[in-house]
Amino acid sequence: MNTIAPLPLILLILSAEAAVSGNDTETVLSATPGDSVILDCAGQRAARVWTSWIKDGHIIASKGGPFTDTDPADHRYTLEPNGSLSISPVITEDSGSFLCSSGLSDNSTVNERVQLQVILGPNNVSATIFPAVKLLNGTLVTQRGSSIYFKCLSLSYPSQQLNLTFSGASANNISLASTVLPVLEHSIQNIEPESQGVYTCTALNTFSKRRVDNRTELLIYYVPSTHPDCMVVQTQDTSSVQLNCSWFGAYPTPKLRWEEDGDFQVTESLVVTLNSSKLSDGQKMTCTAQHELLTKEKERSCSIILKTPYPEGQPLVTVLQGTNVTLTCTENVSVPPANTTWRKGQAQDLIVPGSKYILSSEGPELKLTIVNMSEDDERYYFCRSENALGVKELEVYITVKTSSSAYTGAVIGVFIAALIVGSAVAVAKALYSRRHTICLGGGFMQAEDRGDVLDLVDSDDEQIIHDTVPQLPPLANGRHTTLVQIHRIPSSDDHEEIETVEAKPQLPAQKEEPTEELKEEKEEEKEGAEDLVLF
Image (cartoon, rainbow, N blue to C red):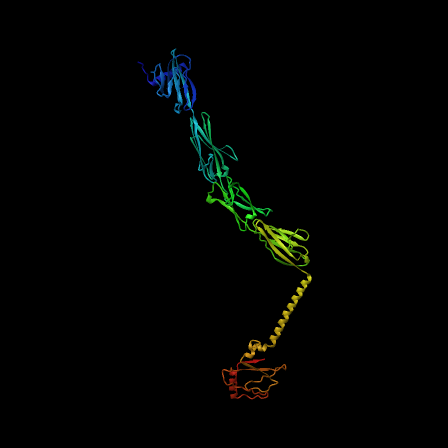
């Protein structure tokens, strides 16, 4: 029966023997999980009497010698006849130092250490970018202005290093982050188109120097804040219309389409040619733009409304012979822009610039200057505007006046002015001659219709004056004073008696004082009199 010594004592003995013999060596082996590996013990220097394998202070296999024969407890371990230890398959827990102690036939002991390094990875290297949409080809897409987060993972043994790098249009292999931890995290706030490119997560096994890369392409989609731009392409051909729709600054390239029945095309600028026979005044042409970031309800568009020309200007012009005249025609409403020309005569001959005709333009105004007007220039002139929708003309007729015609007009004007002044003088004289009638009756023909009687008495011709009306003395300049007495005549319907007041003249030489009865009679006459006017 074999006696088994305590393990600490055995190890102490083995260590001491190794120190005495000086035959302790160490071998380094590498393996990956799943491999098969054989650990040799003391080579083939001599015949072994016994062999033992020890790991982490435990005998894992032994045959002969001071130890009891021990089969490996782990079925992955196998003690070979030559003393080697076979491990299959290798796992990461197998990493460590193995001690092989062998007794030789010469009673010597040989110890040998085998360092087994189990190298793992880098395995399962992954890179996650979110939030993002994954396309069919694996490319990730995000929107401009988003906040993007990156996460790198790797399984590596015994040690590793993780790196995140970026390669874009402007730079390559820019290091963004690095760590020795199993997980690497990074973020980009408010991402811009400059950040579009390839992001690489690199895992490096620092022991084996093995490197594994995981590359992911990230696209930055964006659309401009403006709508597409619709415009008419200027051409000389009026039989058709060219329309251009452009929408620059979008990524990826947008899809454009003219009208509902057209096909979408992937382009930033789309030009179409339309026959004039299919166009009409007021027709609305619409261009629609599609993009991956826009839903159908949010598609953007622009429109053009077609319009026929409408030239405007002064239709009648009168000029003096020998002078210059400038005709102006304005046309700025037509879509597409009209081709405007000046023509003359009923045949509408095209006016060619020269010494007689000078053509100029200021914005939408087209001017025609005719030099040294003559009677031959008195005719119709046409401002003709034409586009694909139709033709419109402005007719201008020029009347040329000679210098004698101008003088005749001046004479007629003077004659009319003199006639007006003479008429005014005649009316003034008539008014002045009938001033007494106007003062009494307020008009020329109303004195006969009034109920008043007007008596004019000249002091030299008439000497009979009522006692109740005093005689006025003559004026100092020799002129005589006229006395006017007005009586109210009752109407025929009243049938009232009219008392006649007789006027008795009073001689100027008499200076009798009026009696009491005469005073009362004068007072009554004053009350009965309606009006007294002196001239």
